[in-house]
Figure 1 (cartoon, helix red, strand yellow):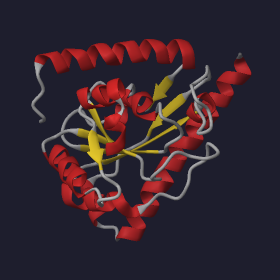
Figure 2 (cartoon, rainbow, N blue to C red):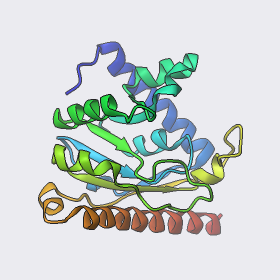
Figure 3 (cartoon, rainbow, N blue to C red):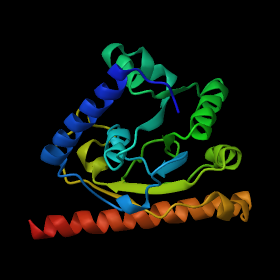
Figure 4 (cartoon, rainbow, N blue to C red):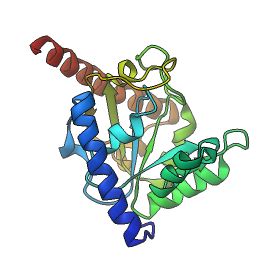
Length: 218
């Protein structure tokens, strides 16, 4: 496990509690599928990507500490850079190929950490899921950890790409059944890519169904 000071451990717990309060009051966040989250060991969380809020929203569905990848340029923005560093975000240098970030990600997975990635590669332009990219496959193959599919819906309405700030919305998060390392080993890269995308899309369909259902009731 990553060595964290007591200050960071308690700070993460406090930050998550505050984010949960804001998430519930401003976005009516609800999460289903908690029973699918492995209680220990490395986990590679694969989620769709609708907004800047996604790492926080997905993380609210876990009781375990969640790491995530972030562009190295984001660490340069003063307080925000300090914040994502405080929660142990992993910087990725896209222009340099991201080798150091991938090595750090692999290290954390092998040490029993949860790491969140967005296989689409960038935020959605319309709220729907784009084809997933194969970049995460090297992590999946080398780490031999479960791949946990997750999807959220409503975050795009809350903070679309063109908006400067978020706005109130209804957000639902759905966690699916993990893909075991043994099952992943029976698939070639194209098959594994298709399997991960299929499960993320299934989670997204369920998250959207629940969100629309909640809006109809209200």
